[in-house]
Amino acid sequence: QKEVEQNSGPLSVPEGAIASLNCTYSDRGSQSFFWYRQYSGKSPELIMSIYSNGDKEDGRFTAQLNKASQYVSLLIRDSQPSDSATYLCAVIAGKTSYDKVIFGPGTSLSVIP
Amino acid sequence: DVKVTQSSRYLVKRTGEKVFLECVQDMDHENMFWYRQDPGLGLRLIYFSYDVKMKEKGDIPEGYSVSREKKERFSLILESASTNQTSMYLCASSLLGRSGSSYNEQFFGPGTRLTVL
Image (cartoon, rainbow over all chains, first blue to last red; front, side, top):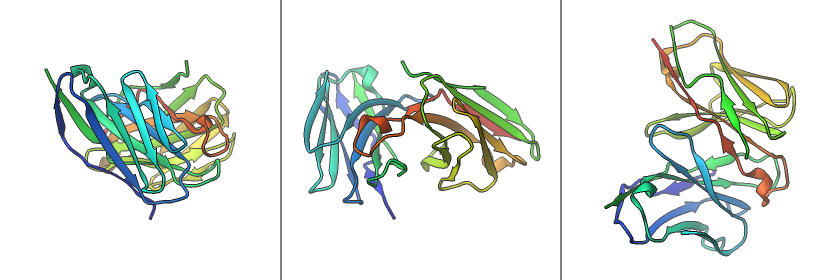
């Protein structure tokens, strides 16, 4: 069973702090990794994708991938109340274009003003 | 920007009715997906399609069917709605490309919250 796991939270951080969200996956052959943000009552929105080991930065967001340890993380610097949402980790657990995306259960983040 | 639209934001139907949920994308994506999302269960894949008239079962296809007659449109059909199909339904689309590329990034529509009474 291919799985993607995340801490469900809620994770609470003060405004201006760094929020760290973690995700582990079970399939070593996974090639594509995504972070989605989902506000309450809204649909998921892609915020980061990462495909190779290391860090990828986009504004206040940094995605980190370690394939050897099978984890991917998302750091949010200078957290804002508007970052309060559920963050979904998603993994394509395979090497073909037809492999399905597997979503984790999501981590709820609350940024306290 | 990629735009994925869904026919309704909110829908209320009665048990036994046939329900059609429609999804349209405007970016010429090959892949289209239907998910449902329930509290505590996360996103679950119902069906997906990687080409016109092609469809593949996801993790929970029972009680659902799909239709893809045109590349931009993917319909989800509940043949006989039941109360356990009350849920948020999300459509998504992506390009078809090799794994490990941005082609597989999925873009979601706004969702349809279906209530079956």
